[in-house]
Amino acid sequence: MLASANVVERGSKFEMLTVGTAAPKLRASTSSRRMVLKPGDTLNVSCDLVSGIPTPVITWSLGGEMITSSRAAVIDGQLTVTSLQLGDGGVYMCAATNVVGEDYFVFRLVVEGESSSSVSLIVVSK
Image (cartoon, rainbow, N blue to C red; front, side):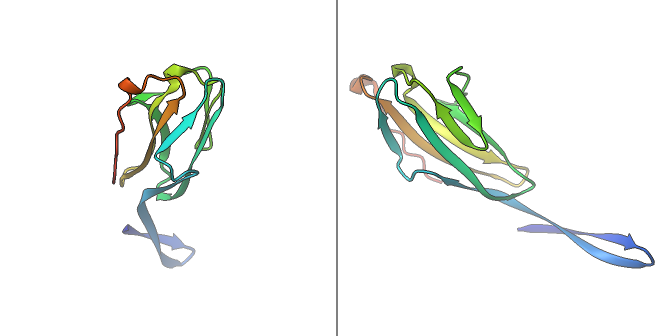
């Protein structure tokens, strides 16, 4: 943890104000690195911010691209994709970033019916 100190005047006294910074830390709602769902199902995965100063920005991506599907929504770090389709399968990543660093969670979603010959498992460890 990094910290800096600023002197603040309060009336006729001076006080030391310490401002800290900390890299983000995430907690995912699942520990599984692989999920299997069926077409039509709903994907719900939560990526909760445990810590980070300044407040980190949380983003979700699929295959390295920002998720833009009209069936997808991110609210308070929770990704919901409704009416799953075969094309929704792939490698999902939740990332929290601030000026100090980043933390991330990666998992693979397989939508049943997806060709297993085109599926490759990617293992990402931090």
